[in-house]
Length: 344
Image (cartoon, rainbow, N blue to C red):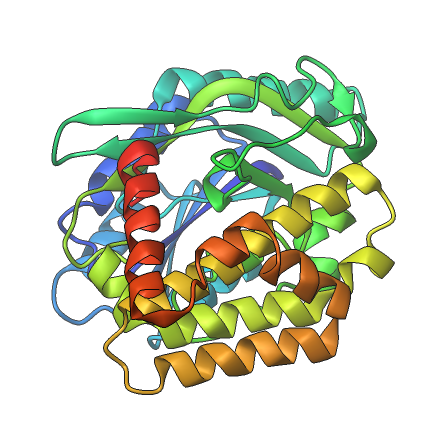
């Protein structure tokens, strides 16, 4: 049977929490026959992830598919889910996150309606929620004043995104063919590939639909989580790798013709360079600052206009203040912003 949507769930030693993720999708879709869940066991070896995946497949044949692979990292697992997807649309849900059942039911119904009307939507967007387990608080990221609601629209109809409103992977549900036709350059054994996934395919999406529902619940709280400050500092080499792939994907001012989309993509890339700058300063890797200087030089050589926008703007200046005192001020500004926005 044809599927309207495939949910890809990358799992790596996820036995402690993957059941909650999978069950949340089943609850929100009410066991619909046009929904598919692909559980990708990314070479798990410390727990019963592989066993649980097979048990879920046996319990829901035709709906849940378990795929096992050698460990390749988050990006490889995302692509494996995509390769095995039978759905018209593809949405990634990380195994420690979950979806709100009521919002998912509304989201799925809207997808069905637009497909029945042959609307040709390439990208569905919904809100996501940071679920902070340490202090039991929530932070909703929505787009109600940025994106048109209740209809199909294009990039030239969007408003201005503020610094906290980026379209992260959690907000996105792509038409499967959009991802497959030109591919998504997700490197193996590398964290933070969700930035590529949420940025590189955007210009391919011509028709969009936004549903103002708090769909995706993004768990924040594990000490080993990839967005933990210490973890990010220790993995700054991966952050640079991701940023470089994004840099080399486009000459934004030349390649992106729609001003509104170009503005959004430029601002997102500015944030990526800011993150590289801050976490290079926080890193204990001895070559972190040298590699940061190289990244800035490579950006200068690749696209001087983007270099000026990234380096000489407010965020670029604030995250690269000279002298040891400047370094402390840059880090303090980042931590203040994090305290206010609570993005990790």
